[in-house]
Length: 266
Image: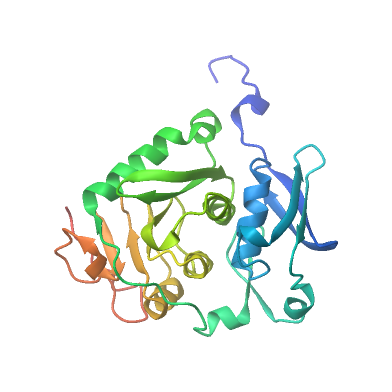
């Protein structure tokens, strides 16, 4: 354009395959931004039920150059998980969840946390300011754990689910109380996103965009508050409106359907 050459390498995000070796087993290969790999591995293993917390980790070693992460744990749950049926999800690179997680066998969020619309917007504003990789190249998602509008952990990745796994991994390493946090994401809220929040015990999930109907069905079961378009004038509380201070509208969708979404201009 305009007769000027542009370096493609300087303008596009990095994407690479990274292998996760869990107790000697190849647990999976991430198509991801090859940074913060220890947090990515820990968050993913936690979401899959292969670890119950950071205290189960003996060693975790990530090599960004070799694109591998090695994890040794106190308890090896590989055999008990290996035969479980998987469902390929809409996650980048073909995510997978356990079929049992789609049959409403999810932990339910506790009560007590309340959020304000101002805190949500403040959290998304800070998340945007911290998203330096996105500012450089675009094409990345961000995720964060926030409390009272302040970010406790933040990550970026080309995959929205990877970004969430990274930030949950960081939360485990920081020993955060997930029940007192809000999970912020730039990506669409899918069923897998709700499962990750439920497994961690996060009661509020907020996105810059929308949610799917299955995500909302699981969120109702898990008693998770789901908020869409959370940084804009068309903010929508899909489920769990009782946790949102200052929200005067009704839940945005009828039971089991996204098609009838009603959005309130704020």
